[in-house]
Image (cartoon, rainbow, N blue to C red):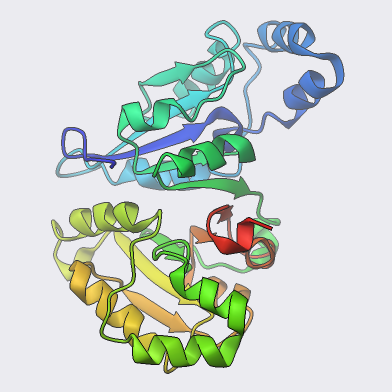
Length: 302
């Protein structure tokens, strides 16, 4: 289980999520490792542009401004230390407060997620993400957002994070009923089990860590706002509410959409990132916000 190291929220992020490495990655896929290494070393003084998770990372690190050190972001990269110098140069240029890094020389980065005690791992590599989830840690494959200028999401100072429910914050036990027997059986099952808390999903500990940071601030100047954005509707809402109450975790906004498309609601919430286990919801959301696919649970086993 992930834990707060030095009372900090620990976020592990891959170099391809933090910076735009599409050009060099294309070299790797087209010409192999040695060509990639030459490409990176020859361009180590050329500035990398921000990647899909750059703005989110900067907002996370801003939580350290003022009172206390609340967050630590650690770089996990398949680069070698030699080729990773270009990444560190970019970190220094953008003045990101990232001092710890792990370079694995082309091998799976996820094995270091438990060693770091990470509450969240963001990567562009689906296999690394799957391995991290299998070890019991919150992880998501980051999905590029459309042009933010066209997305229409209002700028704000708060860090706003939105979550799907089943197979993300909660276990997939209810989703399994839905997949096996349909909506009516799901609704009946959830109504009957309303007083029984759902099991925790892979993102429970991450939400709990965010909540712990929130409790250190007065409500009128909260730096974090969270939302549950779920396809559930009444009567399946009650079990969710009672589960969060049992956990002692606050969620700031809860949207029970009854199957409506989530994108416009995520735009209205102003999410900096949204996590969902279903690829179609992630792709729809990525039209307006940065999204992370959580390949966990029954919908990802087929």
